Image (cartoon, rainbow, N blue to C red; front, side, top):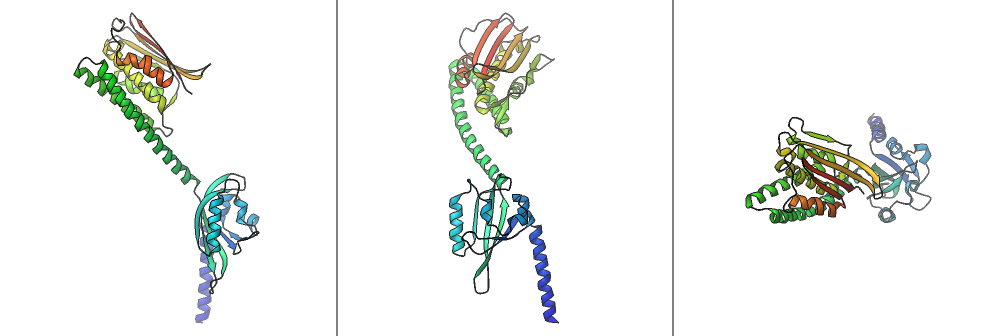
Length: 332
């Protein structure tokens, strides 16, 4: 009676074990023990293996797991695996495998020996999982960290240049403090827009609205244009230029007059130098405009810095009722 109960228990455990392997989320392969070609031969593959590779179990039984390998499979990893298995050890590693349709995926697998009581290896059990998404996430994190280091370095250089230029163009400490604070705040807004975007870019409209929306009283602003994404290396200088134009409009231009109007239009054009962002900044009905008696930071930013950093073409006209600015920025 006791022997019958033990046999039934063993049978039950085997059924439960098979059900667990069949339901497992990880791909499970069981192969024969020989390592030399044409072995090892696949003797079992669970449904998760089919979902991961596209091969049905009957298509791989009797074949070697080498059928999953291809040109991008890491030979060094395979060599280390062979050395470990030849020594009878477990092996854990990652490499690129190929699905039935020829597409690639990154596989992480743990291979363990199955031994007889005398220690002889009879089979290998391989638990495998597709870690392609994890690798893509890790690569993206590495890229973001690299981009962050690069941007922090550039930002510090920009802040230093802005501080020095602000000091040269300011006539008093209070003017220097006010101008520098506004420019640093503008830089912070631009970097916040870039950081929030997965592609590390900012839209031209987003940069523009961050500057002018607080002053849109009684519909004085007209903003019109398509969605244009600017990578960080363009977004920073363009954002600074928009800040300087807005500041100038508040202090001396259309936004300094209750009746003043500001219209900004932008579009993308294809020309001899490739795709370009064009934008027009038009102020109307503001106080009388005269040519500046000295070259301030904003004027220098538009005519020198923006052109140097983005290869932009800038035209500035001082009309009787407001300033007109025409900018063409290459998007390559």
